[in-house]
Length: 436
Ligand code: UD1
Image 1: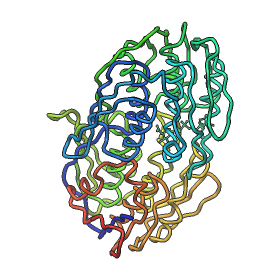
Image 2 (image 1 turned 30 degrees about the horizontal axis):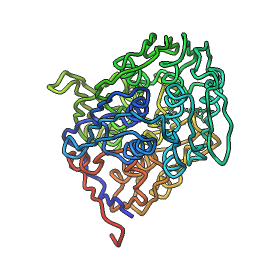
Image 3 (image 1 turned 120 degrees about the vertical axis):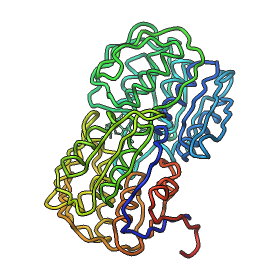
């Protein structure tokens, strides 16, 4: 099993380029199931979650061509979902268990073929993460759903899903995406209220529109979808990954330095920029040859101030950056109260941070961090995707050597993490299974 070995204490200086957003790419891949023509996707990050999703589509009978781009950091994929009718339309447990987002094939399959069998994703390290909101909305659209042998067995007795006026009881990114895709091919109009407004949903909607869908209210909490009988092919490049960008911003804030992130959309990381600005970092944004550039600086000697954090649906502070921001707060002067409101069990990184020397306490859904605490390197274990990134950030700050174990979690969502950090002067290397 690979690990990352980090020699901390070096400020981060240089430039890096943001990759495409994993969480936008995943639903875009699922959307290819909505039509029989080729959907060509650019800037898919070269991470294992994307390879898993492409495998799910292959298992369903799609033709998938994948090529490396951007020096191995990205993929371009052509997906053709023709001739699937004859198949089982089954997303198997072996794939779904490794990645919950596989549930996103359910809406498109039901909408186009009137049947689907998708393994239930099961539990997850960061909380229960049920799929009730997805299933309730599909049932209201006319699907019959039963759970059998660990699978969601769904069919549409009338042959075609019907549009509904639906208010999600809770804001859910995945449920909004699943129902948005289903509604694109449903009969009549669907109105989705209390929908998630994360930028990844806007990106999916733009791909669907390019395929011929009729959607209004993009990037808002109310989406109106007028169903069409069929969708065609399209070409689409996914948006930059705001969580990846946010992770590097946290790394620079925690370790100090001066870095430019190219090809990103600062507007989509505004909640984090605001936090880090209040904490003492300086930001500048400007047009570059490849889109917007964001520069972050924390000068030597510039102390960080502790700030409170409350995670919330977009445009609030993203739960996916809570762990990384906690690493920053271990270095800030004062007390930071971090409240996690989206997932009930998302502080697993806290105990590993404590092993590195962080001074913190967990009370239910709240973490109380007192800083600044001197961190010293040791071996720590990654528990989930974003928790792993936090340990890397802490390792960049810590004196001595930090080894981050179980980095297969990191490889699910960060393309070329060590390469990008090395580009900023970090002393970080990947070592294979044996001894370090
Ligand atoms: C997506 C992101 C994930 C991010 C999360 C919240 C992808 C692939 N993943 O996950 O990185 O952390 O949004 O921004 O895009 N819930 C229910 N019932 C449901 C569905 C969700 O109760 O049917 C609950 C969840 O347990 C959680 C909350 O709703 O408490 C939000 O979850 P949701 O937005 O659905 O997260 P995902 O789409 O799984």
